Image (cartoon, rainbow, N blue to C red; front, top):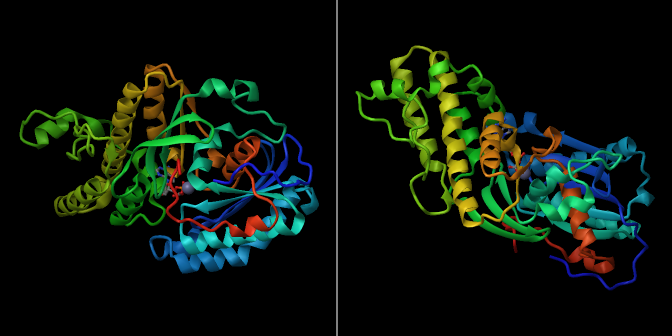
Length: 389
Ligand code: KG4
Ligand code: ZN
């Protein structure tokens, strides 16, 4: 985290023009903001390149980032009607993420900041997901007025992405404590792996969600599961008729774990394939039940953290898995029950994007945390960066 700079600065406005860059995984993303307002957000997706491998290949990602980044930058400038010389602050993800992918965006951003004499702000990708709900449109209109921002704290953030599943206590901007995180796979990873088991391709989240939308009415009918299992009383950690259990639901420990659920899915899918001739006969119900298990795992631990911190006023959510409307609805129900304000990012800013990096950069800028001059080139990528460090 950079210290407040005392160096002589090129004068910067209160709501500066921010160029934000993210290449932490398989999207080359650049956005331009004025303060919290997004002027343009360009995301060049590499999904097609990685699809045939069933996951992100780091070397392919690095090459594609290198090939695309200049064009993405030009496109972001063009859409924002901003000239390079107008950029006052450059913000870039320096972790967590794939090392060789992070490096491309970080180096590009550092070189640009030095060249144009802009301030530089290294950003934690997860802080980007966390603050994405506060992004505004180009006219500066958003869900929360700047004067009302402090009323959101203390807050809880539920971050669910391809590599992270965590609940974070936010006492203020920049003041974060991870309360609960996964000890193995992230929820998004579980979506991707289960989709692969079902031969649904990559990434798994969107396609499993679509499939779950076709589930039959009794997908979650505990009585159906009860009868199928020979009359034993259903336990409340059973997520539906196929008997998938909600991970670490009964444990008092503040942890997530999705690798056991993934293995349970593998065995269940094998079993169902021996009993039915076609996946289509059961896969919609199965997808719905899997989502239910993931969602319950998240809300159970959210309830626990809310009980520990009853003064929390709002719940922020972020990350690619937050595109799942079942999970959004279930977390929303918890927020409603506990009378907390619920802050969701706009759909455009749930999967990886650079606008959210600009938002995190903006709040760092407001705290006076930036780097200038030769110091800029000293920031190194940190693939294992954690919130609160
Ligand atoms: O936040 P993100 O774009 O990248 C990371 O920082 O990891 O999240 C990507 C993850 C993938 O695992 C993808 O399968 C998942 O988000 N995802 C979803 C949905 N859309 C994307 N998971 C569940 N339901 C969705 N609709
Ligand atoms: Zn992400």
